[in-house]
Length: 574
Image (cartoon, rainbow, N blue to C red; front, side):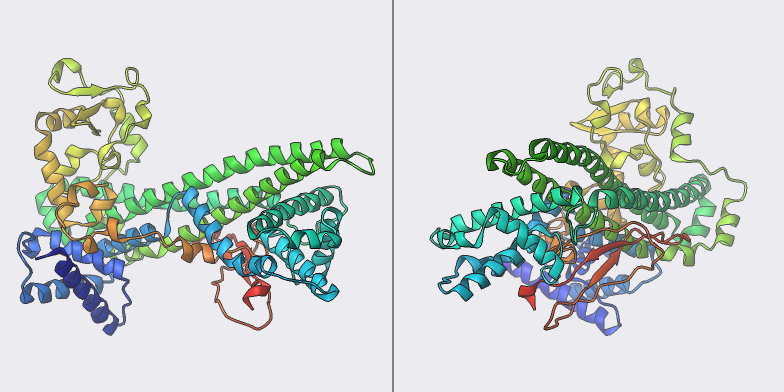
């Protein structure tokens, strides 16, 4: 089948799956439907041959299987797939988040900019109107207060007049459009620097929140919440692992527990744990940035005070560069505020994908299954075999790496996210953490870890055998493709990109960051006793205050944390 025809068939299948699910009251995104198509086709138990064209009966069978799985609300496997799709659609690197945020911000500021750069003011009233628009532009671009707040407007106007009096509008109007845009940005930075300096001196700062202090409270609150969620997920994973270890040694027990989907539940909490760790790592990076910026802020303000002191006039060449540097630094504080809000919101939205656990495994059931078992943490398992290292004289055929002889040992990219390859392959998919201290196997430029020396030796004897077994297991549980990072192994099996999550999914950063837009200001507030609210966008003729509180909340804990972001619409949007 030609690629274009195949693409059309796949699109129709995805659309029909969406319609069938909607008829049963379940709204399914195209991305989720596409991933489910991949999952069903990959599973050899469903009997699809990817080397031949799908017949009409195959298509109907595929749609039926996909819809059935998508409507199975009590399946941890489906929850994991949904979680993966959501995370892929909504997460990207901090650099990409900020790049997209600024792109959205610039596009929203575009109409205000054009009203100034295309202006042909001549009369006194027209020039006064243009000057007021420049003041609004400065406020919108800086994010330091609302252009509808009289006190804020007065302060910004006074600061602007000190560096750009209205009498200079004539010269401004003769500039090219690009030069006007350049001057507007420079004026914004200088005015922002002046207002921040005046605020520090206690002579202004209307509508400017203390972002450094706010972030210093908000970041630990966010970290504390994620740490709590992470601990809960890990405890759950350790309990499932203990039970599944027992099952692996008792085939009869395996048959009895199969309907409980314990293995799928373990994959679910492990995936959740991995996503939380990714988010936590980003938040720690935010914390480090903020700590460094607070020192820079103090140094820059001190430099300005030393330069200005009690002088009535200071050369612009001395102060303007510092005002601009101060403005850029404040923009960085605003960036960190946006990032914390987005990451916190992302954390909150991952929690519902753990919904099946309490239903499938009430505490009473878990206690019965855990009777007589020792629940071990990942750290405990590693300590047990810390001295149980690979002996090179036993495995001369393969290359083994050890911390004391390998540069950047802890930076090596381990296969299967560091889980023991041998255990997973030989126990029907049990996830046990590999222990790098035992030794890392380098095989075909890839790196593998194991939970015991015995497991390492057996895998090293026939790596391809176990790699194939892992691949077969992933075909039966498609969530393992992302959980164990097996994308490369499966890209060639699904010939059309429409059924490939990694190729189909694009990061919907705009969805998240549009909620964080800062035409007026973007603010995070310290923890308060307030419940989380959702934002509803609406159009009104006059800007009205809108506050979005997201993330930074305790979930099941008794303490609630809130991130408050000012979303009051800009004048040009009304």
